Image (tube, rainbow, N blue to C red; front, side, top):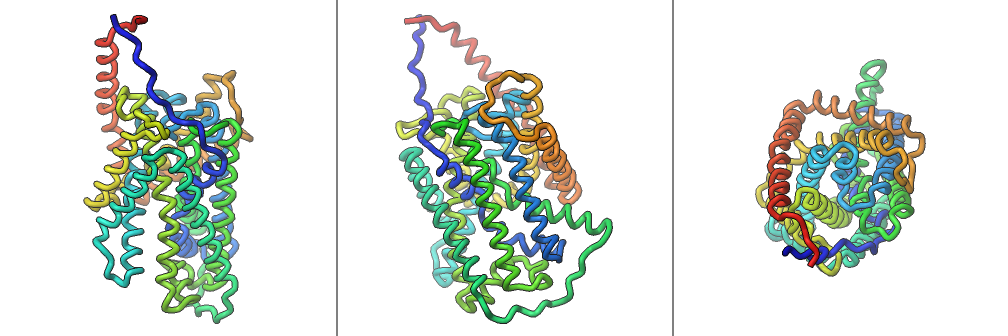
Length: 451
């Protein structure tokens, strides 16, 4: 006679809107906003076009959030893309979305840890400890905090995100209060016209949208919010609004110090501004800002990757990966995510992985929007605590943009895009192997009988 096993411990529904906003802001705002403005200005050396494309990127994030809020509240489970893509497009696409998301998030975690370690070395006058070891220690520290429980992890996210926001706002305020002489432009800005202008808008928009990437963050914790139907949309839209405001303030602050022609093509515009405003202390101050920006990002990345691994484990029958401790932490999922990030740090392979999986980031957006269309058609009467405003037009609009970005990436970065497609194709035999193993286990277990 087979007895029914005790139910596994579940994730805890203890998080709220504050955490949702913190994880979105913490996951989204990183070093990209300090580096990418120069690239965008290089393509669009006009104040109106430059700020306009940052506003357009914010609108894209809001429209994308609009679609994600519907599918995530309809399926209030933790795990992110893999959860709603599996429901909308089927188990295989859900698996692809999940494993590519997990690998790319782990590589992003390692990249952020490396940048923090390098910044610490600069702050210590070049005499800091070994960079990979510092990066690994940072990962271990956040993993230890999260291991204690979801409340501890949530508090860490709230505190580090508040510190990040205050640091950016202080940087903006100091730039606006600066009254020194503006740096002379190196050459007159040439604004493209006709087809070159269209190409510049597309390329600039690509850089901006990647800088906004991260607004799906609260959806990874839909199964841990106390009232996901109400709190998830508020978290997503509140977080995106905060990011838009901070990004626009930072860009206007950069323009207050640097003329457009000088900002254009600057590979690290914020560094140039810091050197102009703070002099010799500029690099140290900026390095401190980078550390504060990335601490909350690392905590958010570990939280998100562990939830993705947890959801994948549940869908593929890997029971150990779905184990949750008393504090509500998926411990094995967290351990695997932290170890993967540490391996990337020590091997130096994270840059290659990020380049390859950047294509898959946008592919997951595309899968999400297609999932919304599929679920609206297949499950019209399902309970939807939030319905996407303007669907199908709003969702169709961001879907077209996502497809255009995929095509643009395929043209601009052929080899890495082809490598991403190859990984997509190679995932199928892995998926078949895992699901076959799950079916064999189910058959061997036989029917359950009451004890």
